Image 1 (cartoon, rainbow, N blue to C red):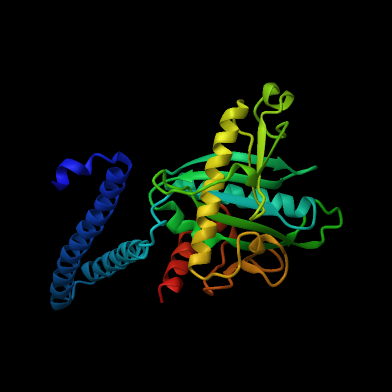
Image 2: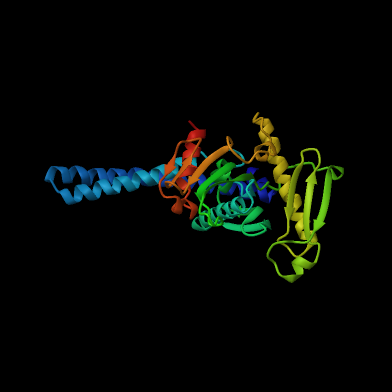
Length: 327
């Protein structure tokens, strides 16, 4: 019987339950919206008959709020790919330009942290390499939350910043670039074969936060997958063994995503997307001077409030990307 075998694979059972809850929440929200729409419509029609301006205005406001809520649910309907429900890793790499680009890389990481916090998602810094003066040369973080990879997968690409440099004594305008790569945390049930002879494993001393112990032992681990040239690293644990285990999980995720891209005939592989961090490869521009604008180059979506965007209010950009993909 189905019920007897369902719980034999606990991971698969939890996956099904999670998907069931997601679909039930959507259906319940849809039914609630229909009921709410009818109630607002009845009030509005009555207010029009009685020429009650106050109730008419309230009804219009309620309809706008309902429209916003409905669009949120519509966006969730686009999260149907097999990896959309998974957690994700985010890699951020500063482009050419030294301190300017390294500071920009840290600003981007902060943006994703703020977004995660606003959703009550958990995030963890896996590794970071600090800039010589400020910012980050590179960083990897893990975000755990409902359908987080589905929401963030469109963030992969080059992000461009234009601003008056806080590091330039001449207060000149600078353009900085940083790459973002988002890939899913692989489910334990997904079998990815990793051959030991294909790996180069290096250990080194951590350069990030973590206390004296972290910085005086070779606890950090870097693993290179020689056939694909994929590199993963971890330094957030005191134990070299734990860092190696995290690295292997990240490598498994990267290889899985790599194979998915090949299967989907997306010809640019993972390393190609990070090979040229500069002009012509941007997905989004953040302009702080001479005017203030954030514009997505793929969807055309814009915001005239860069401060809010950099504080993590990126939902409209994420949603516009989902709509674009599903057009």
